Image 1: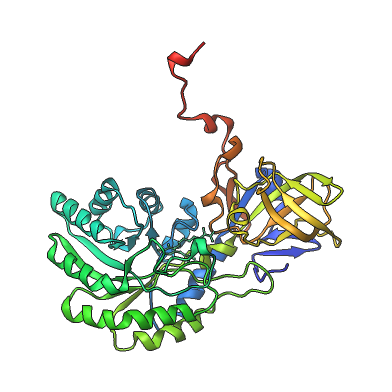
Image 2: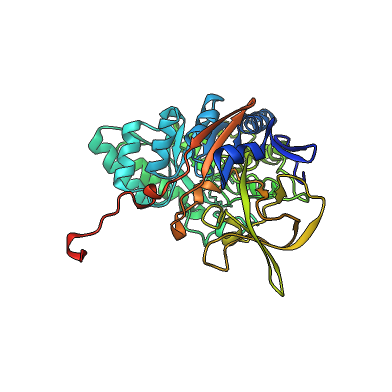
Length: 423
Ligand code: LLP
């Protein structure tokens, strides 16, 4: 195995998910198939929590990274809260058993309906991304006779050195309130009825492979935090967001949580605030694989294409960010061929790997795409009217379908043809 993931490993040349042969899972549940390891989720969660003991953060799992109810539930049972970014994610977190007092709600475009829903649920706090949003939360809180607890998301203008589509903490990004305007925004919050200022939030981007951007951002927001603490007694929580990087290939490593703690501690000293973290990928990223069956091997004069039954609609990261995912054989081949792994979607951007040494597979063989636990199924679509894949969770020799494969009927559900177009 080219990645350090102990739950997915080879035994006698065969890929196992924990103690179950992946071939067996593909036979029982079909392909393309997402497989999640419950032990991996729990291990990553506890590893992070214990490595960060010195800052003892409240953990809000970033539901956007993997919003399957079973995944959220596994983490909720371990004590995690949830970071949500829509009414839909809030609903999922609640269905999965996360207490409202452990849910935080971010996002630049919260609608009135979403805000009212969150106020009625009495979530821990809103991560507020603009001044007009403060007004909207206050207005609905007043109408509903509730208090909207808020942490303003401050944009510290720090480069997280990640893909431009997933960088969020620079001043040209749409997220948060500019550091220079933040104090004014807090003053406004203090003037508005039915709001309680409970803290400050920042999230720089994802994935972040070095601790330096976190340290730099904290250094920048620390004076503001000290100021706000003096002014508002309820200002007590500092949420550092998510973004901690994971290995996608053999030459990469997890962002070390102990280094993270060492890097942020100097700026937290003397602040006396509780800390929040919103890890998604760090917990779920390497907890999942995407299993796919080879449909055809096509030898063009210029290139070899391994055509599989998973496509960009199942895993869009390679197409969208040119992201690298390791692709390994379910039965080791020993030999490699040079070429692309592509799906059946009618776009040249439909690839899972480009110009790589790949396992020398033949029609009918199985391949596993690694690091497919975060931002994978959640970004799947029905493009080309392809039903979304099934998701299975495994633990201790057991497997459970945590989301059924979509059927043809699922694809047309909710659609209807007007009488007046019928011939
Ligand atoms: N908190 C906030 C406010 C966020 O926006 C995000 C991710 C997180 C936490 C969790 O970040 P994580 O710990 O999972 O890195 N689709 C992209 C990633 C988009 C991330 C969006 N926000 C990808 O596939 O790489």
